[in-house]
Length: 66
Image 1 (tube, one colour):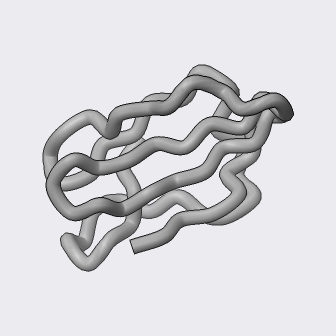
Image 2 (cartoon, helix red, strand yellow):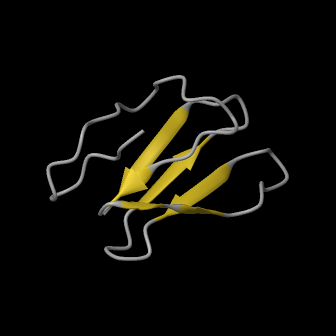
Image 3 (cartoon, one colour):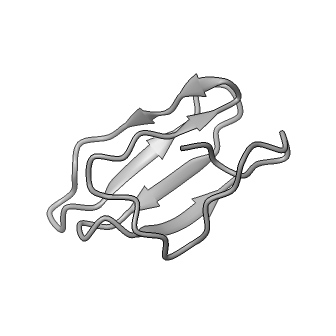
């Protein structure tokens, strides 16, 4: 699943059910994912541009930050 950034990749929307084991692509690379916090939330980070995508413990896309 690609993240919407200034690089015109395919979009996902806030609140989309992406699942708890989602993987994202940004800048033509797979985003790294942090271990879940105490609530099960995970942050995916692009190593090239620094875009972050937060996925809740329920598998919903909570935020995208450039």
